Image (cartoon, rainbow, N blue to C red; front, side, top):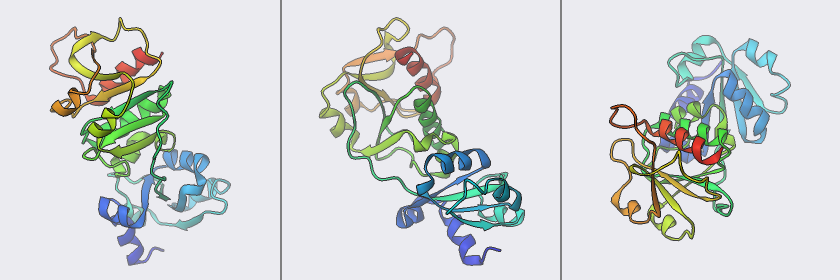
Length: 244
């Protein structure tokens, strides 16, 4: 049985400040928790789950602190509308300090603020073998529960660096691509061996200061009348053409 202080502590991890102060974050649901236990068991601090789930996954939980909770207790600590069997508390990853640019395509996110979009982009990056994503400081927090959930486990394979994006880009000696409504058609482009692909803010696009640093604008050809594409959808289409 969870005591009141435990419930309050885990509930607080839905907010950025408590996550930053404690250096941990939460992940929920059987699929993502199972994957994290397999991929990065050393990061898992604690697992709280229903009796049946803990019993069925006892081998994965070897050496990890577990707490059996009731459905009502899981409902109290969950950030999901419909709690799903298990919640894990994990240590945050070490801050990325070095980016392997040579021979790699890298994503850069300019003030991408929707947690669902960021999590989905991380998952898309993982699918297409993108190892690094650079985010400006105003982008959504990697450890926001909605981001973690949307990654579906890819959070443990794609490395994120939060930094002064304009300053970082200005130091790079490679081609910098910007996703734009106007630019070279990605369906006719030669696949680049390396470079940085910038995805802009959901409503404002790429900021003027970042655009000044761009080498080449690229675009997804439009056939219908939609005003724009969702940032994550656009990222998936671009990577599909430029990486495969």
